[in-house]
Amino acid sequence: MAKEKLNPSAIREDSRLQWIGGSAVGLLVLLLVLVLTLTMCGSGGSSADDKAPGGAGKDDGTSDAVVEIAPKDGSDGVATSGALEVGVTEGKLTRVAVKDDKDKTVKGTLRKRASLWKPDRHLATGTKYTVDVLAEDAEGRESAKHATFSTVVPKDTFVGYFTPEDGSKVGAGMPVSLNFNRSIADREAVERAVSVTADPKVEIEGHWFGDRRLDFRPEEYWASGTDVTLKLDLNGVEGANGVYGTQRKTVKFSVGRQQVSVVDAKKKTMVVKRDGKKIKTIPITSGTDENPTYNGKMVISEKHKVTRMNGETVGFGGEYDIKDVPHAMRLSTSGTFIHGNYWTPQGQFGQVNASHGCVGLFDKRGGNSSSTPGAWFYENSLVGDVVEVKNSNDETIKPDNGLNVWNMDWKSWKADG
Image (cartoon, rainbow, N blue to C red; front, side, top):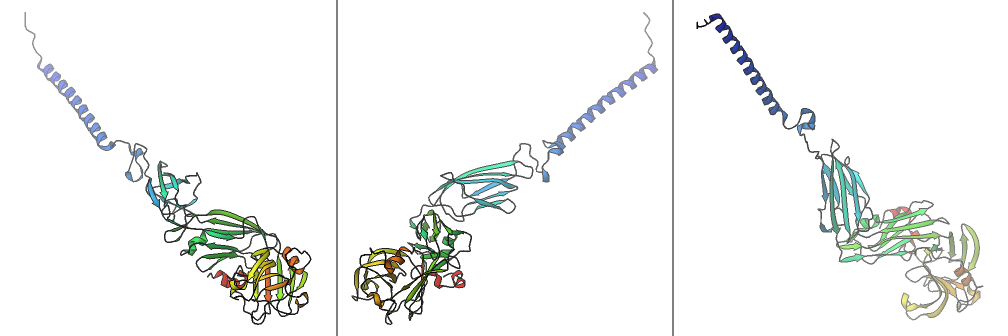
C-alpha cells in the first residue's frame, strides 16, 4: 500500500489551532482565579451594604447598646439614696422599670438624652427591688438587662409624731406640727420627704424649731372650709448618720371655720369673732402684775372638760392646786390655759386681773353647766382656734411655746430655723 504523503502546510495550520485553543483555556482559568481571589479578599463575610456605621458591621443582630445598672445584680445593704442608677453607652434607654417587693413602681427621670435614669425619690429600707431595662442602638437593635438588689436594714430609726390627728376638724390657727423622737441632722432630706398641701391652694412653708420639730403653715390663718393633706414619705430617709425614717402615711384634716378671740388684758374683756364677725363679748380675768399673761397669738392645742392644775408643775410651788378646773383649754406648753373659774366671785370678772397667767372665765364647779361664759366658750371652741392676748405687761409668747407659730413674721418663717 502506498503511504499517504503529509502536507506540511496542513501540519503547520493544525499546530497553530491547537496552540490558540490551549491559550484560550489557560486565559479563562487565569481570569477565574483572579475573580475568586478578589471576591474572597474583599468580602469579609458580608457585603458593603451590610456594614454598620463606622465599619463595625455585624451579621448576628447584636446591639451596640451596652446597659449598666448600679448597684450590681444581687447586691445587699444598698443605700436608699444615691445608689440606684441606670445608664447606657452607644444607644438610648427606651424602658426602665423598677419595682419593689410589693410590685409598686419606683418613679424616675431620664436624663442626658435618654442615656441616664435616676429615681425621683429615695428608696425604702429593707426592701428588695427588681430592675428591668431596654435600650436600643442607632440601628434600632435592642439590648436588655435585668437585676435585683436589696436596701439596707437600719439598726436605728426615727418617727415623726404629727398634729393634728387624721380626720379631725380644727380651727384656722392650727399648724401642721411634727415632733421627731430622734435628733435630725439632715433636715433638708427630712423636709423634702414631707408634703403639706391645701384646697383651696395656698403657699405653705416649713420651719424648724431646733433639730426635732418641724412645723408647716401658710402666711395667714387658714380660710374657713380648707382641706389640708399631710404626706409623710420618711421610710428610707437618713435623718442622721445610720438613723432612718420608717413612716409612709397620709393625714387629712379640715378647717371648720375661722374663729379668733381677742383678749384685752387692760380692759379685761374678750371679743369672740367668727369669720370676721363679732359674735360675743365676755368679761375675763388675766394674770396679775406679778404674773402677767403672755401677749401674742395663741392656738388652742388641748381641751379638757375638767382637769387638775398644780402650781408645782409650772414653777409656782404650792401656791395653788385645783383638782377640778372646768372647761380648760391649753394655750402654751409652759402652762398657759384659758379656762373656767368658779373660785373667783362673778363680779370680779371684767374688773380684776387675779390669775397666775391664765385667762379665766366665770364658771361653775364640775364643768356640767351649759349657761356660764366658761361653758359657752368651751362648747364653741375647736382645737386650733386662736386666742390673741394684747395689752398685757408680759412679753410676746415664743412661737415654739405650744402651737403659737403665728408670732413669727412670714419672712422670718421662710428663712427657717
